[in-house]
Image 1 (cartoon, each protein chain N blue to C red):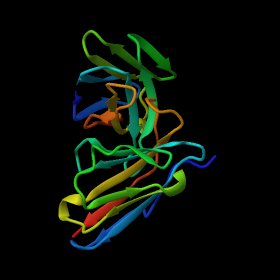
Image 2 (cartoon, rainbow over the protein chains, first blue to last red):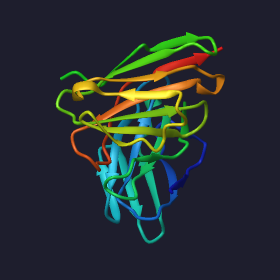
Image 3 (spheres, helix red, strand yellow):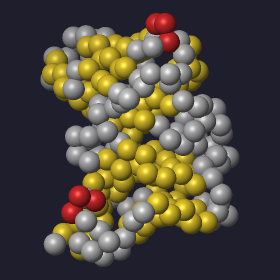
Image 4 (cartoon, rainbow over the protein chains, first blue to last red):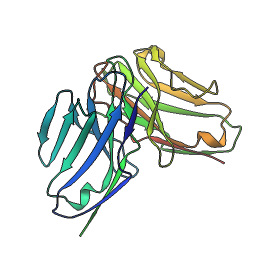
Length: 110
Length: 114
């Protein structure tokens, strides 16, 4: 099976940078995804890393190190609207389900 | 293009009753998934359809849960009889490709069992 660990809560100041870490244990590895969910809303796809390195999409970046079974989501120039829960998710094979972590609740304060 | 839609958005029932949740995936998405999130816990996989076939139902908790996807379009998830521990938010997601890391989720159906 798979397991993922990520911090339960993070608080950061508007305009700052925050990093949300995710470590995983899987029998195989088919990629690490990140999702954002605002309260009462749908989880929304942010990024996907299959290979080591940094992927940048606007203010959000995602990093993967397969040798360390570790990844992170980096949010820059934080805005109040970034307050949400962020989930990392992994798949260990192409035909197995996407498994989610428990989520990190990010609170952006003024 | 319409996203994934789920109905009802919220259902409150008593223990022992039956509830049926519906999901309409994005048109053309053969892959449809059901997930559940219980308060404060992970978004947990329930099952996966490819068209009308159950590809993986390893996450279904017990035989009180029945999922169908007749015709390979919309899907229903029936809980019968409901128990207190079934309370949570049931999410449906769809994707064009199998094995992708990008799923398109609906806003969920919040189930409260009293």
